Image 1 (cartoon, rainbow, N blue to C red):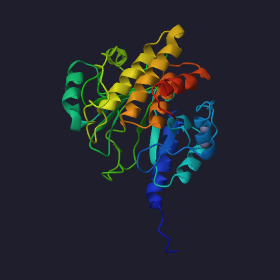
Image 2 (image 1 turned 90 degrees about the vertical axis):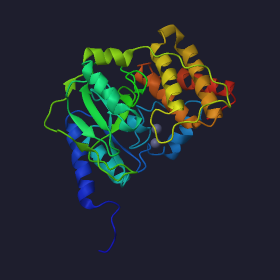
Image 3 (image 1 turned 180 degrees about the horizontal axis):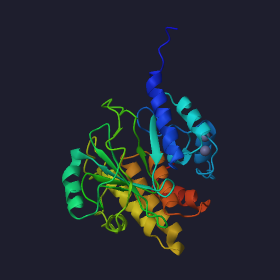
Image 4 (image 1 turned 45 degrees about the horizontal axis):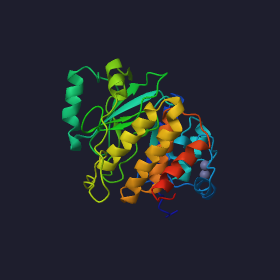
Length: 309
Ligand SMILES: [Zn+2]
Ligand SMILES: [Zn+2]
């Protein structure tokens, strides 16, 4: 009876209650590790990823593998997930899957000033929002449907504002931020989740300017602690190219993007696994049908830069 539980029972109970409430409203939920990172792949899934024919992450039956692909609205699966990852964080899959576009405001990177400008332009009308455990805001809007809204980090809407939509997720209340220990909280749970304004959707879909070419060894150092670090911006540019690739150019576009990502891997700015996951998620968010040619194109792009998975 003197055993110390991983999490106070009340906190675990609140997390589960919230997860089931979100699921009942149609939001697929999943768990992140206690450090806010996706839960590691199980042995067979990791082996499959390293093999020449990794499986479709969306069809994988595992409880917690493949990050947001594991998100579910099934109460039994959700209960099992939270039990499997004690002290994990509760996350909601964004995009068409949940019907959500979340605007993530980071005050540490001028997000507050940018948000004020967006409000002045009518892009972000009042809606239900959460305060994050690190002092930011998550504004929840309804996904327009019928169109993929890409995730973005500080590029399309401005500094300090990320978009969490197709191919993304948000940490949800009442999770606690792993660094600050503070909970994510609903600021005004009574208010409605408003439709994403057409002008906001347009801004989210806007073509982004190509990053200037960088040579290995001359990369500016990534900003510490910031979501919109340099590799993230470059990765966003690659993701944007995937979104804009016409049907007949998909494979060659993906190959080129994989080479670009591999150069960041070679420069030590991200791991090959992270790069691979971001590229696969981008293809999925852009609604490319799953095919063997997808992982193969990435693998070949990596190989062309001397990077292996
Ligand atoms: Zn697995
Ligand atoms: Zn799997």
